[in-house]
Image 1 (cartoon, rainbow, N blue to C red):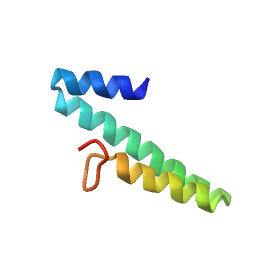
Image 2: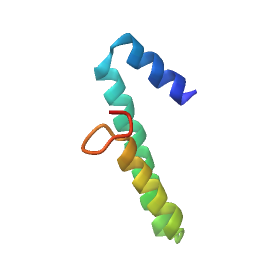
Image 3: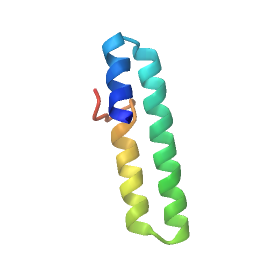
Image 4: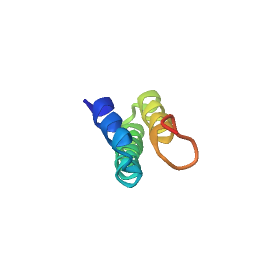
Length: 64
């Protein structure tokens, strides 16, 4: 569902809303990773943070 939503937004040429959605997804992933690390799930937290950094539109992005 997420991939189809991103695909539709990219096809419509609405880069502003695509970047906004990617920022929100990235922020949720990174915050979830921080909470996972605090709860003791170190490996899962690191994975979530790395995925959040890869999804985010700033710096490194899988979707660029």
